[in-house]
Length: 114
Image (cartoon, rainbow, N blue to C red; front, side):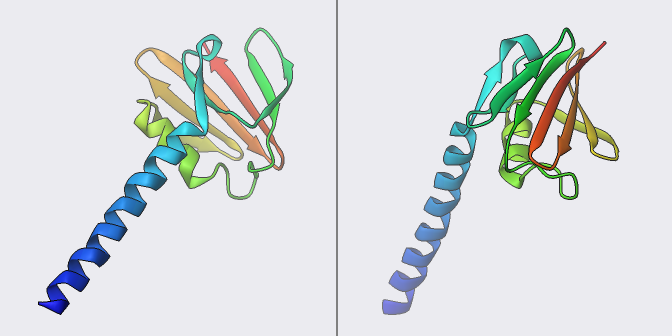
C-alpha cells in the first residue's frame, strides 16, 4: 500500500511540474499583431523596427543554439510551424503568413516574409 501511495505521489508531482512548466512557458511570450500574431518574448527589448519587422535585444537568444526550448514550445502552441533553417535564420509559417526568425547572440530579429 505504501508503494502505491509513493508512486501515485511521484507521478502526480511529475504531472504537476509538467503542467506548471507548460503554462509558465506560455506566459513568457505575447503575440505581436504587427507580426501576424507571432509570439515575442515579454522581456525582449525592442531596439529597432522597419517596414518588414522588428529587432530585439534578448539575452536568451544565441546564434549557436538558436532560441530556448520554451520559446519553441510557445511558437508551436500558437500554431507556428518550424520550417527550413539557414544558419541563424529559421522560417516559421502559420496559414498564409511566414516569419523569418533570426537568432544571434543577444539579439532576435523577427521579420515578415512576403
